[in-house]
Image 1 (cartoon, each protein chain N blue to C red):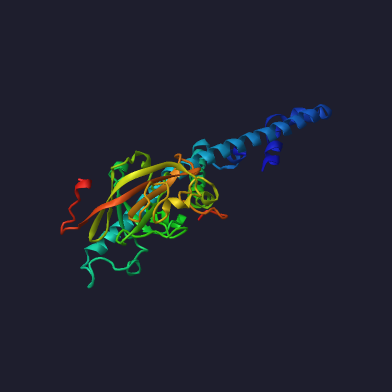
Image 2 (cartoon, chains in turn red, cyan):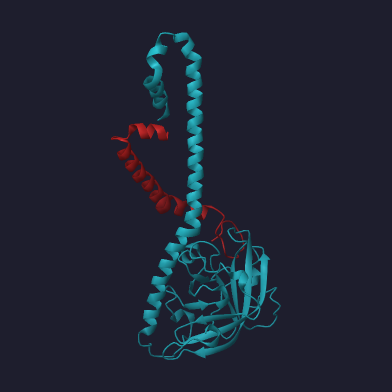
Length: 58
Length: 260
């Protein structure tokens, strides 16, 4: 997978490394900005209130 | 994605010599498909591991950065509003409805938690608490407000992530001060009981006369709730205090003795 990406990037090794870095940063950005905020409420790590527990936590 | 990579790799390296012996190429081809599949699986597993690691960083660090930023902006807004000349009428809000509770009602100071001031807003929904504030309960049991004649001012905040405002709740002991600051008044509470672990369905801890706190008569109580143990949401941690005195805020907002 990563080898395939590396072979399909243009330029010499330095250019490819630079593009790879940009791609990695883009992926991290998308994760932090969109994926994790979406996933967090679905995971049971961050409920702090007491409630009656009828179904989903508030 | 991967099939072409498998096709390419032998073609790059040693396709031409092997073309002559087609029958021996067959098991080798199957092996390279298996190897390619395993390497893809390995890369995916590594990727999953990295993403989970990033999620931990997100939860425990990045949400704090965002929430603290958000809370300090809101806090500054509130302080600016307080600086404006007071509205005509009673110096203290007569009823909660008269307040702009969307912005926040005041600041909580718990010296034992060593986390400065915590903005307090209405409600305990995630979108409220995620802004790095403490929220007072509107359900399942409606919280009283500090200026009410009696009742329980019940608050919740995050233990980790999103500002982690009650992270050090386990450092709070009997006799420690909890001070709530409004525009005009310091409400000084004294901690009298802690419940180190209870069920998350135990809503009686935020009743007007909180159960399990040892108190049986109505009074002016404060209740802090958050999750425990740290980094999980399995149980709830509860701290109770009661009002010992109030102090008028003076012109230069000098701190009460408990915060000095």
